Length: 171
Image (cartoon, rainbow, N blue to C red; front, side, top):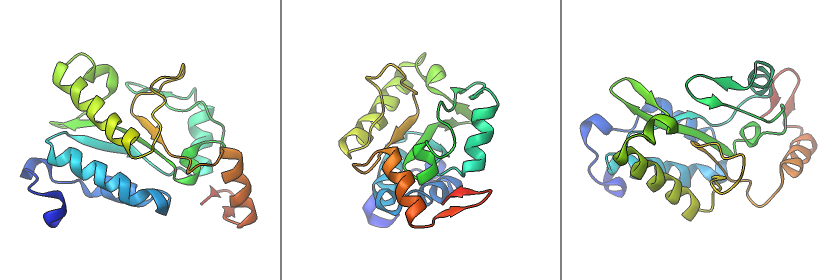
């Protein structure tokens, strides 16, 4: 953290599990994602990283079981191999305060939390990520950056680079 991130209040020190998840993103996205996460914590925003890279097996499990997890709602509409999470190109996030995960639906009811939410979304948008905020299938708490390629291009590249492990999926 050091000088780059300034003084972060003790109760908002970055959480190791969140740092580990962000470090599991595609290497081209790690630095920007960490900067946004540290900035949120420095601004006293209790951002929490739920998921970044998913294995194909994890994606299949989410897709198989209705694609919803209460209280988070819809988790995925993508089959295994077709999710940006399978290539480390997406982040699912929420807030975590006083031992409670706070989803967008919960945050939208509280003025300050809504402001925090939009602050984080704007940080990602300014860094070149997409939030889907203006799309029909908007999933709050999900951002992605396909690095200028389509999912099919990422899938093809993973196959060509032999980054596919049987039973595990693309890594």
